[in-house]
Image 1 (tube, rainbow, N blue to C red):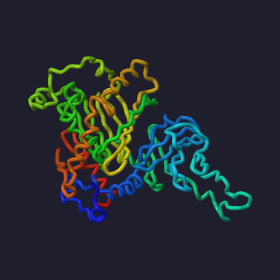
Image 2 (cartoon, rainbow, N blue to C red):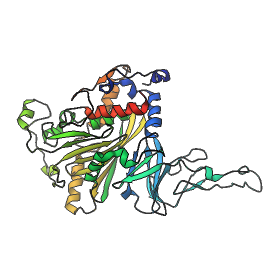
Image 3 (tube, helix red, strand yellow):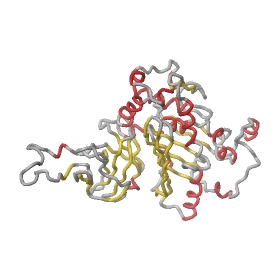
Image 4 (cartoon, rainbow, N blue to C red):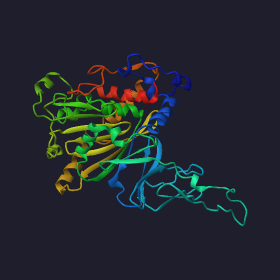
Length: 414
């Protein structure tokens, strides 16, 4: 269901602010178009990839900023560059492979050639044939570069922005979020594999879900049944000063108030279930702070996860008002021994499109998308943990969801 342009332009946010979310924002074509312009192509730093994915001059990968296709590459000087994957001539996709190594990029349509910086270097038949045709006098190919994206890196992670006056990346992330990134990217990483997942829901429904820490004990039966994550375990929510970024963290089963959890009579707790292969949850204590589960979201579409020893980056890509794609990049460290790599790969079965845990996350957004049809002027109720936006030393809260909507409203002008 889509809403008319007139209704999008007249959207009035509920008086109760970030604790009430109008369903219209999940189903309006014009709001979606505004998000691509004001958020993803606006004043934000977007996840592009990892330096380890393009280690050598000429290496490249294709990805997205919002729904805009882009190329990320390393030029002959070792500098990381990024540009929109759209020919300046007629708009065709220039780079069609997901990754590779090349000195130049050639559009298959009319063979316009670009270098690793996105500058136009060759136009076939520029002078015409036998003195006929060709480009007009005064044609200046230096003005027809691919649209360039400003790039900065932090802790081996590549970010890009369309706003070339954007504040420095480290300022955008903030000291607190940088600290959590340093915790995971504490030493050189290696990529263990990828998965992609299409979801039939608005991109914001998934990002809300990532920031919703208290659903884990209710929706994810595996989490609670086997003690991977319960709300009775010590943990909390950390927000940056703007509220746009968050971390949810859990310290595991030590000092857990298990009796209180049992007395809650939740369907997600049962002592009768066991794992046929208990080694799935056998790992190593590799983080000295004792945190066994940490989910970090960086506005507008990046997630960094640690679930026991399963490390991954998730990249959320909008595909329309009711569709999005999630790209999982599974990680290990370069100095991992063979046994540690096996542990990470086995525990990666907890997550991903068919993971024991996150299988439900891929479907719950679709249930919401279906449920709100016909109710664009109704709104959600987001008051768990209060109505404020601040870090909290517990996880029965929706504070980080409210933080997301605060920054969203700021950028969108609502």
